[in-house]
Image 1: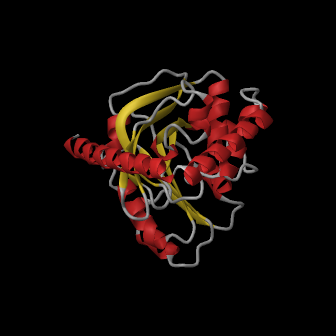
Image 2: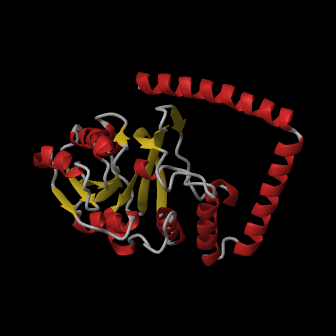
Length: 279
């Protein structure tokens, strides 16, 4: 029997973004799935969009919550699947056969806890960037402290582990990183699947690079003894000082590097979209 997949959408006053998300979920051609929407008490017409598609939604609620991760915990509690994926308002499945390609005719070892695929990231200007998911704990501390090395919207996680651990709602930005790191420290496995899973809106609160986000992740890693928090923050401040110095005194060099990055990024995006369309 096919594993049951729970898709959970978190939304709050996102009527313009939500409908595309819902359509990408209900159009998935995988039979054994359920769809749960957790709304934070929207007042902008979001509920009208939800009710429009209510016959395709297994469960939905609209009530105040204590933030994104509290809402995600509610979604976990209402789920009944073997695997859970969060596809929040503004994010979409990349194609209608994503879940089928991950689970139909495929079995995974019992100690594989997280299946992560690749991602197409989009911003407010509808520019797209292709990101290959990487095992987050085969990299250096610098690699994964600056951001999840795979996109949460491209990850299917064992529901049993999510129900056991849940998200720590005291973490305002990086509770997903904290939970995945707990899973890693318990010796459970992360497995890459060669599928572009999601189109992810990088304009969200936890997707943006920020000093606060880095500090929160550093505290998480310090708690597990992976790094020493104050040493890392001191190194980070030194790096930021050196970067500001170079920008101020060597502007031509910085501009040349910026133009080179933009040229390479455009080539990378064009090639990535071409590959995605052909597969």
